[in-house]
Image (cartoon, rainbow, N blue to C red; front, side, top):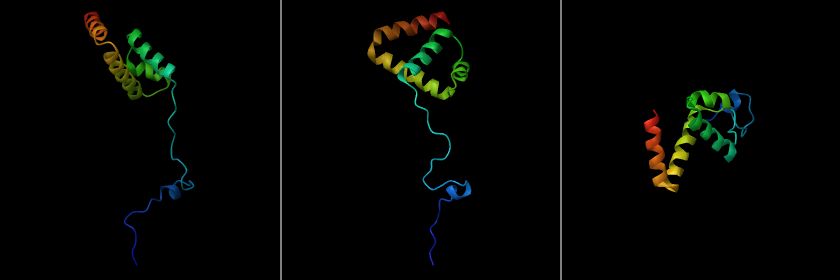
Length: 92
């Protein structure tokens, strides 16, 4: 008699029906929420972690949005982005 190498028994151990998602699902955030969160980080001077905590989202999610926004701004208008980056560095 042959047995499979591995059998998924998570549904049985956790009392879930097979095919039922385990754990929390991703929450969808509107484009406006994402833009507002990024603007809040850029304008407030507070830490990403503090703002993420206030908004009820993960800090890594907010950092990802910041990087995404930076890439979008860099490709949309490279000259303006370079100027903003230089001004930001002077203000630190």
